[in-house]
Image (cartoon, rainbow, N blue to C red; front, side, top):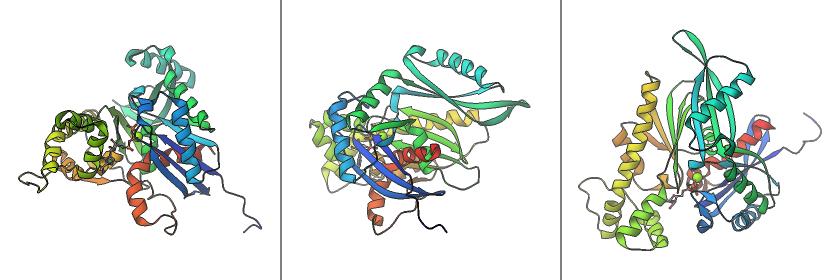
Length: 361
Ligand SMILES: Nc1ncnc2c1ncn2[C@@H]1O[C@H](COP(=O)(O)OP(=O)(O)OP(=O)(O)O)[C@@H](O)[C@H]1O
Ligand SMILES: [Mg+2]
């Protein structure tokens, strides 16, 4: 035991969501991460387009206010990019040098990217080895993020008088905060249901296997409610959040509005099920033996009443709601269980971003 304790490094993850801004601060002692501070506030939604801030100053000011409210002093933050502006691909290549790999990744990217390679930031990571027809192969994840999107995020963070030290992919952050410590190689699927879009992350044990972004989220349901029930966006949002529910068959609720909300959102939930099923099928045809043993939901839309029951029934897989706090040391005096329960689903990306800071430290 030493004479003094050096102050532990603090790690801040900032999730700039188009519906809510979230921030979390962790401190680290050895291998243990401690939840120090966290806060969330509504985003100025009109200052976003396709999930990306279009008015960095306005969003930046809100982020600054959120940091102050949370009492976070550090200015170094890890931020995430996600949605349709980030393309993630899993490729399998023969063993090669780092230099060859850079060229191969670029070549791959040119084939699948919907835009010019010059317009994106490219990065890749070797996830592990596997064998194909008896030959050793490398599993590589390639990430391409549009440069203009990165630029907009950096401007937003700087407008909050913060320094973006790392930019990570939201789906990777989600994986990092939720993947357990178990050693068993179960196939678990994490789904982050956001406002603009949702991420599907398929994992095997501690390995990330596949990620997909689908353009369905809370906004999809809100737009449907707006049109069908002829209400404005704010009313539709309140309806969804406060009275939204997926009703079991043959159940007729006392409240007619609940029935009308159900009838309006049911087809969109059907689309969501189809998209999830498509990703699972794709994965299962590639990794023949894989049986999905668990689906874990997070994100604001994961709070929709009865959603996990419906997904479990439709997909034939157990579904639970995830919490990013399970792997952290949390003081129950500072963060009572009910706070953790309500904040849990929406904080996964922010926690994963903060943990990424810990990997670099
Ligand atoms: N209780 C609830 N029932 C249904 N939907 C809800 C509930 N609470 C929040 N939502 C919806 O969840 C969405 C917000 O989720 P989240 O905070 O994960 O999004 P975000 O990260 O800001 O968005 P994005 O990542 O797409 O930019 C909104 O569409 C919101 O209306
Ligand atoms: Mg989000």
